[in-house]
Image (cartoon, rainbow, N blue to C red; front, side):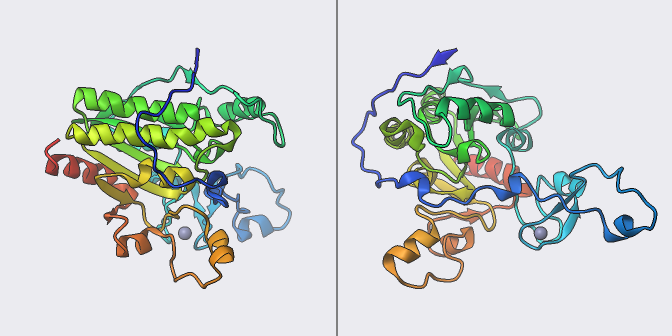
Length: 314
Ligand SMILES: [Zn+2]
């Protein structure tokens, strides 16, 4: 088990100053969907003891407030069958849906986060890491490796907003930088799916900030070598992640209605004191303003990625 030593960035860094983890990131509330009560008729039946309904059989959609059958949601890759809201999807599930069966090979899974500042907020950072690892089954907020997308080999990275809000600590940055460097060496396209409500991870101080420059520099070298990078933005992509690799795609895809931005809307509104436009910081708004190239529904992502890889001749 290797503990990561900080690595210096190799290019001039000129990325925007990240605010504390994206200022007011939206936690992935869908990650722990409200468990709706069983349908009223069931619960209200006289003399019936309330039991036998496994918790979590039903979910309530945060968007349309409908109570929906969990299995229907899961069958649609965690998309609401009523309003098409794209809910939280874990990094592992995302890889499972995006890649051909059994083709994923994880890279750098042995890199584990350290605690260089001995940081303590509500609880010690070291303790927080262990808890998050247990809860999510991940060792860090980024999962990287290679696999096949409809028989096209690609380097894949996914950040998971369920793990300390998908924030970029040293290991997240290092895994992504190595992913890109290997892809450059092996002439593979890079696909990174971002789900990061937090930007740089403040628990690791400056070491997390420098990951923005490091990953961006690796992408610049990949670009110079003629490599393809497709960035896929999901809800939420904020802070230092949005301000670095997530915005640097040759192609930038976004899931419908994802929250994408740097500082949160409340912070911006309080700072510049103007009404923000309708739909500000959504995928649709950013598509209209040229920041996002295409909105891709989750069900279509695999085909769209394969098509883009072919189109770009990679
Ligand atoms: Zn819904």
